[in-house]
Image (tube, rainbow, N blue to C red; front, side, top):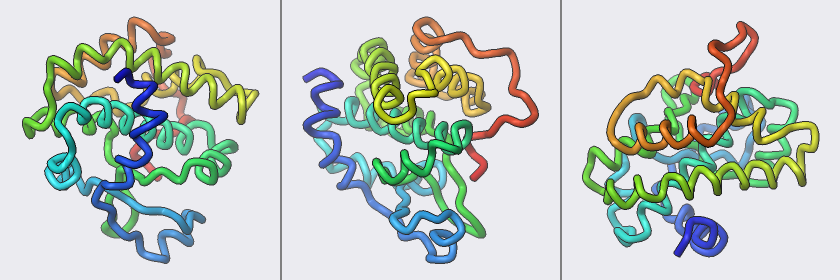
Length: 203
């Protein structure tokens, strides 16, 4: 099964099996998101509960697709705010985040590094899917913008994604594999962020 087929046929049901955390109503009100639910916990502390019951053959596909939707959600929220409300209303994906005295986004690259460290992924197989995944991800974003945000482009999106401070994470084979393929296939980011730009981990 390739990544696109899995995303279209299996991912939506698999993501519903994650261990979700409720969000205090006050945060839902502040963020104007009444459907908001979270998964993962700090540093994906719930990774065993989330991935353990899943077929090991499906996990690489699931984790890559999960990374795509989480990174897209955070990037849209941080850098494309005028389009974010529509994105949320149309997708309502759970957030990879946790709460304490507020809501804290987790680094989406931990969706690759944490299950690798926990021994829950076939690292060689997942790395081998990375080129297919990055091309799929670019097409996914391009198709969404063509349909719903015609003033935006995939190049604009991935420039922001690849220059965000999340890319400072340097843990494991899979993060390195994603970065290598992404920087080979996607637009080269600017050398630095402007002072007015967003930041994924700030909500």
